[in-house]
Amino acid sequence: MEDKCLVFDIFGVLFSKGLAGSLADLEVVFNRPAGDVVNSYQKWEKQFDVGEIDEKAFWAAVNKDLSTSIDAELLTHLVISSYRIDPLVARLARYYRRSTRVVAYTNYRKEWFDKLDQIFGIAKLFDTLFVSSETKLWKPGKEVFELLCRE
Image (cartoon, rainbow, N blue to C red; front, side, top):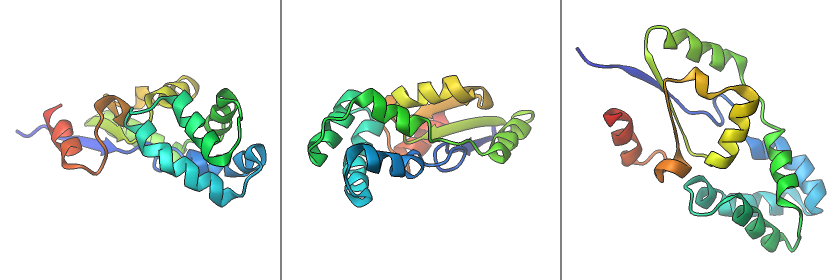
């Protein structure tokens, strides 16, 4: 008999997108057009998500791009506080977990994931959870799915 599991993504599926939810606030704090904020954020986001840079380095790079010096803790707070969980997706994960192994893999940074987990208790929805900044693997790369099949 084959072991089966259901794999969820977290950000953009279980959660809203943090940048989209916080963009209006970031635009005000940086005093820069939304497009400039988005471009800089996205420029450094993958490096943050695969663990090549940490939170402090991420915001330092964004600040440098935007010629600002906004406190990293404030910026992180603005993004983290903008996330919203989709209760229907959470209910779906809980439902399937009763009879199926439920796994999550997300392209995200562990530093922020832990903060969101403290607020929302995300980890308890899954049997196993993988975060790209820990695995150093980026979806949809073949290696991610090989990892999921092994685990």
